[in-house]
Image 1 (cartoon, rainbow, N blue to C red):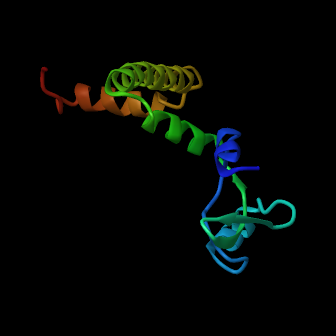
Image 2 (image 1 turned 180 degrees about the vertical axis):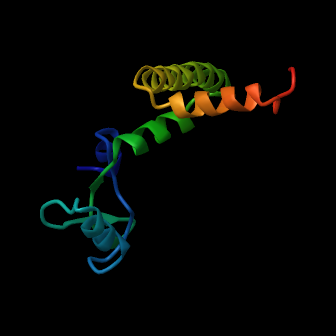
Length: 119
């Protein structure tokens, strides 16, 4: 397969490297060294390519980097809302399960003791 096709399928190639270089070791460290080495000819160079699948995060990062400025602004707005929604859900869960009770009690004690100021 060509590098372009493998990239399109969500695989990355570290580039022209020997079987003892970063590509091999990185694949082994990630536990994603697949099959036998694929030797390809590229610009009169022979190299062994170790194809490592991109993680979902890497795919998202790559897609975000490809956005034009208007799309990036739209994505930022969406993500901010999404992220705040997750935060709100977590805060609600913490309040419902009593995880915030100690903090609320402490705040009320401080207020009752006169250790607060009007906003």
